[in-house]
Length: 174
Image (cartoon, rainbow, N blue to C red; front, top):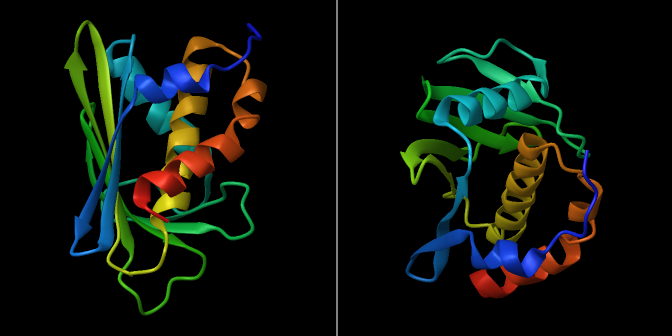
């Protein structure tokens, strides 16, 4: 495993982001990142990584699983679509499921420039100030995913979280 300083500015410049608004409310955030790996390898690594986080349930379309992501509360997901190796979609409820409509997360993979383009979109209708935290959280997750895919050390990425939070807070206008 190689250990080197993580270049957050280079990452930010080479990763695409979108914030979708309806009037002034944020409805979705999307992150796009290119990986120098074939689509089947990216798909397998992504799905395997999430499968190891399942605390309850069986990962299959229509099923509900509970993820333990090392946070204070667990996340409950219903798998909406699983179309290897191009699409995975699920509902996303952090904490106890309640009366609010669950968020939705969709990951799409496409072959691009000899590698794979990963697009992650998180959609929410709940109106809470969620977008900055969710955007920074998913982007940090994709950073760690890329490091694991390459065999790099994850430690330097943890040092960037405060800067990444500030970046996303500014991006969504929070």
